[in-house]
Length: 197
Image (tube, rainbow, N blue to C red; front, side, top):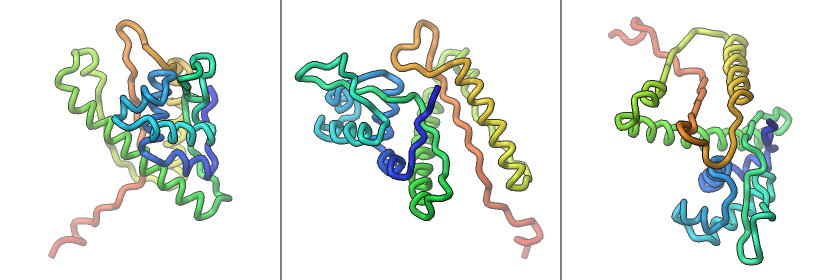
């Protein structure tokens, strides 16, 4: 499974909430027309057509010509994954593009996690039991943090190989299962003695 690895220009084009949502829908639900996407997102089809063309220009989506006709243009995701890797040679522009995309991705993930938390009370027991959030903080060096991150990424790739993402219906008794791995340095709390008066 080959992910899209965007360059700075592509990353800037993807760093838009509507485009990121459209790409997610095409990856999850499969091919669609601009009108179908517009109805789902409560937008006009002109706006969704524009965003689809921008995504296509930058290689994230492609026309599904075999599904279309003269009146309807169908679009599909060109890949099931995007892998963002910081290009150190891109300088400040690359760093800014990476930061903007990272912020958008975190905001999107938080929204999905909050929605899952809201639904949790109404979930069937088997699905309720596999909805969780774990949190821990460990004292490490930057090198040790990189090792922890690499181990999580290796596990994610293993899961993806065993359960490759595919667009469209998932079948009886199955659901899409979101796995979010977040790792980041925390803002250190001052020691007790530093805050005592």
